[in-house]
Image (cartoon, rainbow, N blue to C red):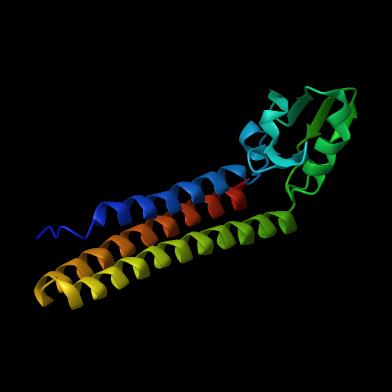
Length: 186
């Protein structure tokens, strides 16, 4: 059943990449507990480049409701502070020299709903990415069917791609449900 020109593994890897990206996005969503991972998505404009916050500061979690960001270059403290404020995490840093303290407030019902909606947006972006991979695979099959692939092989590969797509999207939905229930419970 293996066609020389068609590689389902590359499609599988791309769909897995969408899943991993979703997990990473979900990791950055604040759920009421302090976590250094919540700052993973924060990019800081330094030296003309957008760099992750962990490349210009040390991030620690000294207590359950506090994250500290120790900025290595004292001149960049305000830039890092602005990046955290504009990140949409809903955290207001308190500057203490080169250290920013990020008190993690309790989530109110409105903020939980916002975060739950944001999780849904991330999941939809992952679904779109998976569907794009599916479309690329189906286009490749159509092209091969016109050139060298038999009708039967094209049908088998199309079914395989659809099965892979369905299972990946169901994993996305599962992760979304878990994350939304985690957000709403706290």
